[in-house]
Amino acid sequence: QVQLVESGGGLVQAGGSLRLSCAASGRSFSNYVMGWFRQAPGKEREFVALISRSGSSTFYADSVKGRFTISRDSAKNTVYLQMDTLKPEDSAVYYCAARLVSASNYNNWGQGTQVTVSS
Image (cartoon, rainbow, N blue to C red; front, side, top):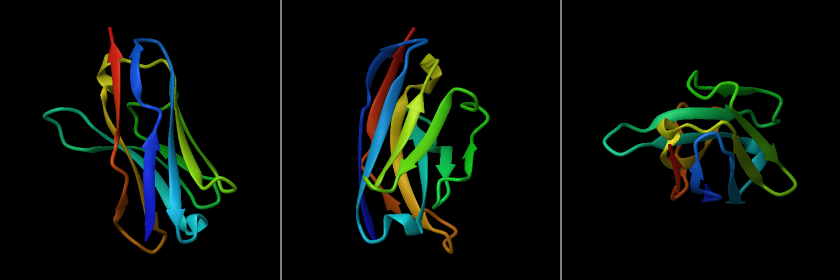
């Protein structure tokens, strides 16, 4: 198991930027594929981005491609989500998640951090 704590959310104007951080503690951060998800009020939680164990591969939802960048720092056991050119529709609670490569589902989740983008 790995424990995850997100930070960096807040209120920003449309067109602005935020960087979310997710600090991981516990066992073997490098064994985990890391992902970011988000959930807006009244909507289901949706995938945003993921990064491989080594950081060499990333994948993004179409809605954020070209605007968001996921990265990880293994020395700090931290994964980041750089969010640029934010839009009001990006407003949501953002969750960090971790899964082992062999797992089909993410089974480690953070508590979430609120991102609000004003128009």
